Structure formats: structure tokens, C-alpha cells
Image (cartoon, each protein chain N blue to C red):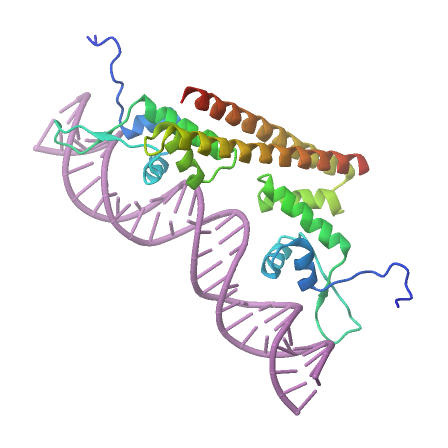
Length: 124
Length: 124
DNA sequence: ATCAACAATAGAGTATAGTCTATGGTTGAT
DNA sequence: ATCAACCATAGACTATACTCTATTGTTGAT
């Protein structure tokens, strides 16, 4: 029995991989982009990184952002605007608003492509 | 004055590049995927390839399909279903219907991502 | 004690989609 | 005739986004 009502739920990279569906390799690769950062427990003699629930959420955001076609570079900006504190609130809002413009453009392109294909199908 | 009311409008690769906005290199690269095929004029002593208006249309389709995230492999299938005669009409319709499913899925992902970002913006 | 399973770091290898260089031949205006 | 601007082919190089291998160290169950 754990005496803490809500334990920190820190996990090692292997569990983070299982939680997110990403491979350990990919998570390490993403760490270089700053998508997640583990924390080292200074009390322990090992140098293992520990990850919290926010790490899971961040990686889920990365997966979603990738599936809509954002590059890792763009995702880095989104993550910084979303979770970071290097930008002011105004800057964050501008960055995110820019991404919405990109998404709207892409949605329009997809709809146009869909219409084109449907047109082609009627003409076959 | 040209005596043909609608001359074939055959062009060389340089003009095709200008018409499509793609580089000559990229068009040559795409030729390996079968996106366009020039025809050689056997009466001429050179071995230049000539391209028609369909080549322009095919490359415009490639550009559009790329912008919505299709891979060159997927685009090859679309081009074959659209212009080729290796597939039966039924097969062509199935291939194009599959692409529409992909597009619908992607449109949904984009809309979800947009909603997520908008939600994040209200919470900043 | 030891052994599989996991951890960290470094660096090599792969796939996709171009992009560029080198080489040699062709054409058209001067 | 010649010279820039074009053409074809082959192959090297680049960027992005992983993916894998090698090495070494740690942990936990037996």
C-alpha cells in the first residue's frame, strides 16, 4: 500500500514508451528536440531519467501533430508555446494562431483534393 | 502562322518545368515513378523527350497530392488509377475510394488538432 | 553470485524525397 | 565556326525522421 494518495507516478523510459506507443529509440531521438525531458534523481546512484504524466501528454501531442503533417521543427515550436516559458503569453498565442492558419490551409487542400478525386471517379 | 487549329503543343522538359513550377531535376526524378513520360520523336536525330498538356496536368496532380501528404508511392497509384490502363475500371474506383478514406481520416485529424490548439489557447 | 532485462551514450545505418555535379551531345543565334 | 543555352544519363550529395548497433553500467529476481 502506498501512503501517498496520488503518488508522482514517475516512470522510466521503457514504461513511457509503452504508454505512448513510441519506441525507446524514438523517445531518445525526440528528447534531442526538447519534446520531453526526464529528471534525474540525485539521491540515487544511477543516472536513470524519470518521466511524469506530462511527458506522456507531450508525446501524445507530438504524435498527433506529426499525423497532421507538422515537422519536428514545427512541433518544437508548438511544444514551447504549449508547455514552455521562453515565450510571453502574447507570443505563445501568435505561434498557436499561426499553426491554426496552417491547419486551415491544409484542411482546404484536403477537401479540394477529395473533390478532385470524386470528380475523376464520376468521369471514369 | 500555324496551319493547325490546335497544334499538339509538345514541349521540352525546360518548358514543362516552367509550366509546373517544378525543377527539371525533380521532373526527371518523378519520371522514374512514372508520373510523366516524354515521347521521343523518331524522325529527329536528337534524343530529346517531348511532353504534352497531359504531362502538365499529371504534374499538377502530383503537386496537389503531395501537398495533402500522399507519398510518391501513393501518388503513383493515384496516377495509375487516373490516367493508366493497367487497372480495370472497378479496380481504379476502389483505389480512388481508398484515397478518399485516407483524406477523410486526415481531415478529421486536422480538425481534432485544430480544436486541441484552440482549447490550449483559451487556457493560456 | 549471476544473469536477464533494463538504462545511457555515441554513433552508424535506412528510407523518402529530392538536389546537384559531371559528362557529353544538340541546337540556334551570331 | 562557335558559343551560350539547352538536352540526357549517371551518380553523388543533402535533409528529415527515424532505427539500429555497440558499449558500458544498473537492477532485481533466483
